[in-house]
Length: 482
Image: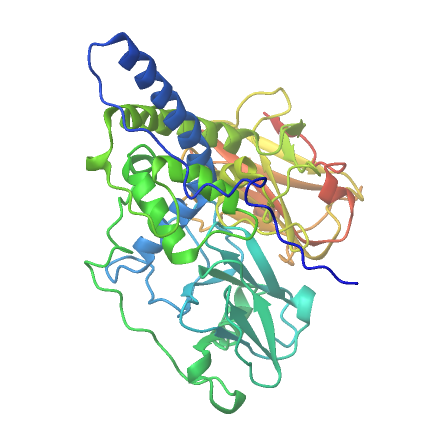
């Protein structure tokens, strides 16, 4: 016999409709002092967690605000690609540590109304391309790339949470866990003579709303410009200033309201509600009680220190001056490791997963000294010691503290394996020379120009074929100062 069972309301405890957060102002009573300090600490501890959790979303929002400004050097409307016609150089401003070998295409998207169709053209013999799909928190949701889908044409629907409509035949669904995000497309010209051909392939990548995708064929589309008074553009422009202002939490609420939180984070949102953070909430700094304001102000200062510290130690294994991958410290996709996500976003926002490439920064020379362009250096790869890849590898120079490419009369900022003039010595070794002045003519392709002041190198291995590259068991040779 089947019995209908129901909970006894006298036994079970109903869920709390909300979690109370006290408002406390200062007065002279001893009891108030206890309540005040308690609320300060409550707001502080929750505020630090919310800060670390939300820093990548706020940074993404800040970058997007610049991108949506028609006066910005790099600009496009929402749901529209900006196809960069030239390789990145010292004028590239959208994000730090750009790659100098690839043509970039960027697009910020909003899927609240409907899915967006990414059309991939026939990429032919292009050595490498990847459309990295990132969510609102800079987590990689997917890579539509030469590795994952091959070289043929195809259509891929970026689908936000909650959408349950039908897609046209032949369109592959790509779920995105938030309503908003970013597409970073990388297309690779094999050398300077192939840039025009690479541009033609690059321009064949398009984004089209589902409703504008008739008969399975992408049509031309450009979204309207976002007005100057739109909240998506009214954001503090400088990273340091936004990261140390209570406006940080205002932007975080806007990002959560627009993009939503990811599955499994409902409990976290209940906790953050105690300080006024969450989707659909308005964070009004003027209405904060004194104790909450004091706690959150402290949280901003310490949260910012925490993000920067994690940025410097997001991968804690250092060998011969190179920072190596840790299997427990992922890049590009972070799960619930919010501190790792924030640290990587600060160090190199929009970092991709290691299936597409491995990036190894270099900070120190062979004697453990910080790298400085006032000196000369050599990196010597012994025979058989180059990174094993299915696509290509590169070593790129970035000036610190901005982590930007330098403007040098030679136009050189990188050495890569695609350069046909890159040669090995009689013993099979390969040397890279980091110095201000040009080396002998025969070594010009091995030259990384530098400028006085601190710098870092990044070795990137695209489509790494050696498993040791993924787990930190392989390291580049030490950087020797002369």
